Length: 106
Image (cartoon, rainbow, N blue to C red; front, side, top):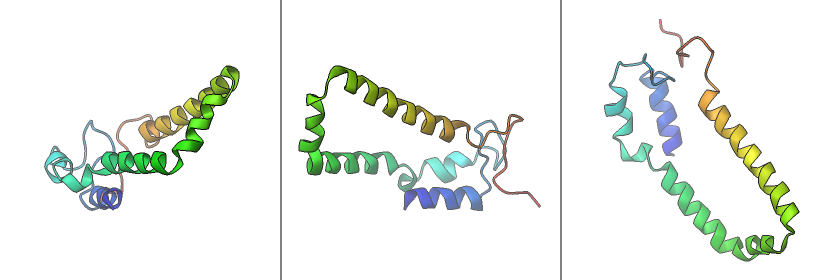
């Protein structure tokens, strides 16, 4: 829900997709960041991760029995996926020429 609220607010108030400018010229902090329902996502991810570990902890602990080479290969693959996702999130809207508008101004 908070991701949806953040997306709707970004579209409605025409926030810039870059911290360097655009949008409302500084009001983003007051309208977006100070609202607690926008910043709850990391806590929800932590709660979900704890629940998954509680439900499937025994399966996760079976990974300790893998050989060191298998652990290394698995960790390199998972880190590669993580880096690709993070890179896409950080630079996904970057056009190379500055700020990318969310919607065209009229």
